[in-house]
Length: 509
Ligand code: BG6
Image 1: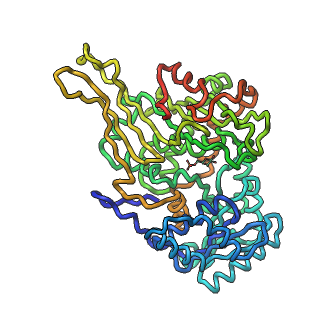
Image 2: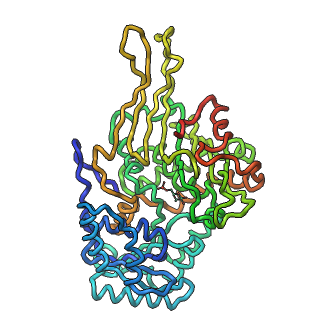
Image 3: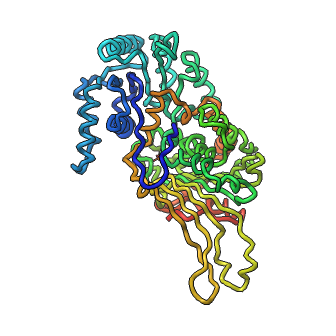
């Protein structure tokens, strides 16, 4: 959901009115995602008064534990400084814990779903949750279809007769990865759509919960300034970077099957690409926005095997093969870069360079837009060789903000140009409240706003666009892995990819 703040000065974080009563059921309640992101996000929503007093949270997982034990396990994330924020957080935590319960659930056992159904019915009677259920699948992706089938068989995906009036709703949030290639994504869609309508499915990509990602639409479509220059007529190329300093940490088992391309590109990086390149939608309605984003991904130029290999680079950091649960001869990439074209009237001929990797020199997610070089002939004889063309940098994280780099004359008698930067920083202007990125997304699920979620065809278009690279890589195993040092900016081939076009990445320093 996009909310627009009043202009001027530091804005108060949006007060979102309380969502309708519902029970949220988290499958994978004992996992990392629940502890680190989902429960903290619910706490933030509770603190902002955005949850109904009739809200209830049910944790479901395979382990035998009581509600008290589950709460004790979760309490660990609340490590604070003891300041005012902590007091508010403690109050929100207390509010939430009164509404939480744990149930043991074996996704392969129909009885577990029947017990869950009885538990939910009880909550409807006792707590007035109105039969509205939000199921969150924070579980390994191979279990998504099993979980949905179990819910379906227990009648838990069936909605009330009149959804608008007294009817109740049932929604399922599905984490990424949604499939591991085009075929498996399609198969998963077929499986879940046997039990759910498309509008009951919320395929989540947490990048869309980030304020700065949502702000891309405001920047482009709420300002008269940028849209007229947002095309191949003025833009030379676009660089999209998602660099991380961490390695695979404890996720070796998952990552060995995924790799950087599957993990980041069809989901997060394509979201950034789509937001950057989409045509203006007619409204902020979910269907209008999602249709425009899908068009971008559909317009990515297909590649044959040779082109896929020429336009992509893979890397693996030194030390990856010694990480837990990683094969000693692993061929999994922890870095990828590629060069794509969006073949439509707005973007024809403008390269989009994407890169992402683990164990790089800095943590930074940004979209860098390079405008055409100005004809600098009037400055001939001055120091213009060192001039850079204009850049607009949209910093997604950390240090969220927007910078515009342009040329200015250095003070003095001699004409010398320098690059200066105009910088807007979110944190200082808006006093950003702590935000996991999941707050908006969870709230949107509860109010039924699917704008920031992925439709089946968006996901499939993403896989379709990367499939040529996946296929080319599968047929041509990597050579020379590991090929980059931790703390560097990735393999040398990544720089060569741009150097071939006479361009260079913005440094990862
Ligand atoms: C996840 C990936 O989806 O996104 C991780 O599976 C990655 O490998 C993470 O680290 C990055 O998210 P963020 O919000 O830290 O940029």
